[in-house]
Image (cartoon, rainbow, N blue to C red; front, side, top):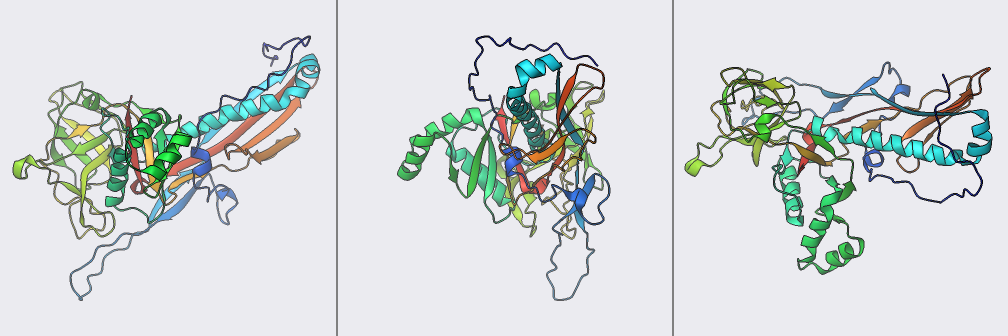
Length: 412
């Protein structure tokens, strides 16, 4: 392999500028749950996947006479399936005269680039592991009141009794702070005016990020189509929808559907989520995440797989809705959007095992102090060639427990 066509300055009047890196707002790595960071060292652990338990679910019986129900051990998998590297090489002359005293700058830039990629990948969980959402993808989220409503919706469904975390779109923060300065809240306004940040409120830590990922929705959401549930399979996970544009209407994996039944008085929506624990009727409209791409047939019928299962049998511990969804109208999808996140109870898991030493090359593995990422760096020369190579690399995996999370939907 030949040395790349490096662009290096001949040192005559060249001086270091001391410019800082163009770093990203990347709270995703540092604030994730790293309980299973090195699960490869757990006793009995083989392979690249670890299963962790989720709290069991039950239903009550209105009697002192026992009605035994089955017990289910609920688990979720965390798989280390991502890898990334940055490599660069120099000739002996380049290394001696241009690079030797500058290697820390190359290393910091490589790590910063990797950290941004990893942060963006973790942020993707706000799309792949949420089924509830706040925001319609059209109206901006730009006030404290909207965030307070989002938190109220999140907790009404059921949430851990712990401080929540909100990962919010960085470019929306000035408008939120501006709206807050118009409110009579002297102490809070003094704080946000000095920092021009949201700060903490309603027992939630707000974190700004410019790494939120974009979800590109199907045509049903982007074109504002309104569909109807014609049928649902016995598992509650496959919906047959009618009324779509024949042959062209699409739903994409990650789309969120709003499912309503407006048969109530005055056309009010009577279909509601049950609270996750206790199975009481919540104030929350029913939403599901599409789990596989789907396209309408020539009759405008869409058969789509969704999560969670829509079950109205109150004797089932997995019951999720207060009535059947068959015949529900006003089935709509959110349009394309940028996805933020609210969660509590540390349900965002990240594993970044330390990579092994690359014998016979000098190797160092450590946690980056800026991002919290576990990185490896090794270097060596090609025997008989005028080439010195350096590699920074890492592996990781992440997951988010769906019922502990809610997507924040920012218009594009």
